[in-house]
Length: 255
Image (cartoon, rainbow, N blue to C red; front, side, top):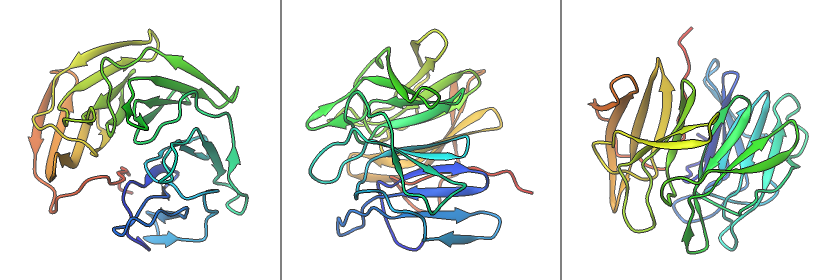
């Protein structure tokens, strides 16, 4: 990557990974946006920057658009919903309908072409609230809250459900996993992780969810776990080469 950053947002679309904002080790917050092309193994640093620097935003890609959701600019928590047209990378970001609740360090997932945003925090408050964005109507809908307040979680879609995994409640890291049903707008608790972890990353692949690294209090993790929804169980897999947290994760099928 052209420059080191953490608490960046990330989304994947059509063979490219988009990295939005973030902060470096000296806590310099950036507005820059870069993309990685898996096919050519190259980075593009010429994409339009976000209107203002931020970190802790969430990001998603839907139908050729990349979205930046919320975040923190070191002074205020953000209501922002911004959209970038991938087909026209010279066009600036567009401001859309604002979040109902300002938030940073939330997780999000795309289901049925809608963006679901889970928890996060604002000021000194950790949130349990959930919002859904419909790109067709450019509107947000408040949904059933999570069973507990969570920030720094990770979310993944498996089958007809969205899973919200790990995170912290502002004091303790969590090993909890919750399953959300977008059709009935209901929550259920599923098997807990083997290791409590916050600031982790996840992906769904081959009918399983994989969770990588993260942080447990002051310890950065290299452990990897896999969730099987058929058996409702987690399996610990081979560890990452390095301890890592607050990363962006994407999965591509080999050609």
